[in-house]
Length: 394
Image 1 (spheres, rainbow, N blue to C red):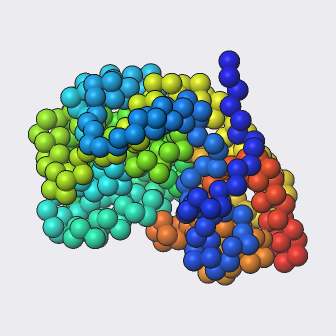
Image 2: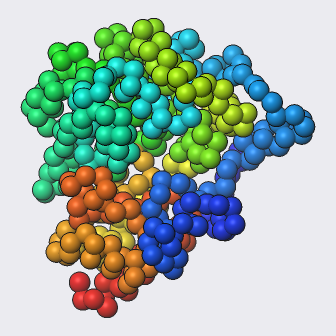
C-alpha cells in the first residue's frame, strides 16, 4: 500500500498562493506562520497530478462537457463515504460551494426574505445573504460554559425559521468543528418542514469527520428532507484542489433543481473548467486511501496542538473538533479585546490565525487555527506561542 507524505514542507512562495503571499495585506507583516485560510499545505495526491499531466499532453483545451463517468464518480464517492445513494440526475454544477449556496438561496427566496444561519459560522454566508438583498436571521449556537461544546438552541431556531424562507446549514460546522447528530438533523428537518423552509446544506467538510463521529447527509434521512434540501459538496478541501473551482450541488427535488439550474444559467457558468472536472473525477474514483491516511495525520496534528496547549498554556481553552482540519481556540481568559489579541498573536507570537470575530460576535475572543500543515510547522508555531505567552506573563 502506498504511503502518502504529509510531513514534507513545501515552499509555496512564487505560486500566487493566497495563504502565503497575501500576509502583508492581511496581517501587516509577512513574518508570521500562516495558519489561517482553510487551505492545506500538503502536496496534491500523485494520482490527481498524473491525471492532469495526461490531459495536458493533448494540445487543445477547448469547450468540454462533464461525461457520465464524472457523475458516476460523484455517486460512488457519496455512497462509499456518506452512505447516501444518489441518482446522477440530481447532480448540478457550481464553481464553488459558496457560489452554490448563493444559487440555492436565490432559487428559493426573494429580496427581503430572511435566511437563517448559525453563528459563529463561516463568514461568507452572511456576506452573500446581505449582498443579494436578503436578511440575515441569526440562530447562534450555544456553548456549554463547562465543556465548551456547542449545541443548537432549537427553541430559538423554531422562532427564527418562522422569519425565513431558507436555512443555510453548515455541517460539519465551520469553525466550531461540530458534526450534528442524526437526532439534531431530524429536529432541524422537522422545524424546516413546519415553516416550509428550504435547507441549503454546506457539507464541504463532510469527508473530515473523526471517529467516533459520523457525518450524515441531512437529505439522506427522509424523503421530505431530500425534497427540501440542496446539498453542496466539493473535492476542494478533501484533496486540496480548491484552485480548480469545481463543486457539486445535489438536489433530488426536480423543481428545486430546475430553479437552482436557472440561477446558474443566468450567468452562463455551466461549463466549468477542464481541469476541475479531471481533478474531481480522479479524486472521487481513486481517493479512498488518500483520505484515510490524511485523516490519521490530521488527528495526530489535532492531538498534538490540544496536548501542547492544555499542558503549557491552560489559560487558552482548546477543543478537539469532531470534524474539519480547523481548531477553535478560546483566548477570552486573557481579557484582551479582539484587536489587541490579534496584534499579540501576529507581532509577538508570529502567528497568522483566523480572527474569530469575523464569524460573528459569538466568535469574539476566539481564533481559528488550520492544522492542515506538516507537524513540524505546528511544533514551531506552538513553541512561538508559548515563548510569547511567557514573555508577557500570561
